[in-house]
Image 1 (cartoon, rainbow, N blue to C red):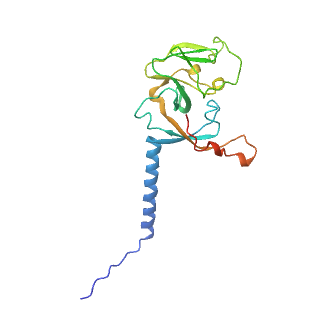
Image 2 (cartoon, rainbow, N blue to C red):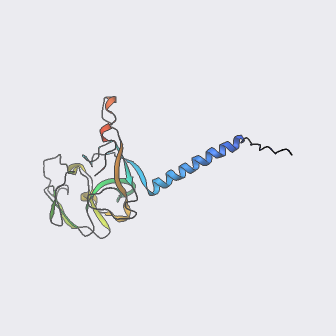
Length: 204
């Protein structure tokens, strides 16, 4: 009795195309899910968060942090700009709901206590009166329920809650996690375009 031979069929051209297409579609679906629910990449376009974040830094933002919890004080957070939801902003959380915020001659007070942190930078020694603008003298105000008060670390060059108000809880996208790439757009020497020492730096 002759044993039957197993004949292996050669995939057709379109069968191969379909297999490749399925692999690509699955990869895209996974990438989309990760971007939507887990991690998203952002580029820093301004100097409002210097020295913590520089222009040209590329960061990863953890979106799960605020899906399962609320922003904490000192978080570097990405959120939808209250005056234009199409724009994403990044600032540091200073005031939580119910906190009393006041700024006197550049010094920030939270619930009556001075906020002095390593990340704060001032570049302009002049003090602007509150009647001119709220940069150096502001409040006191109480952060409303369900809202947060945010500021840039580069205090003299940041457009933040002092100027446009509070950020609603629902506007938060995620917490800055790590710098995965950094590019210096103003460096003339091509060898120095990439800021190698910043790559892999945890944002805090």
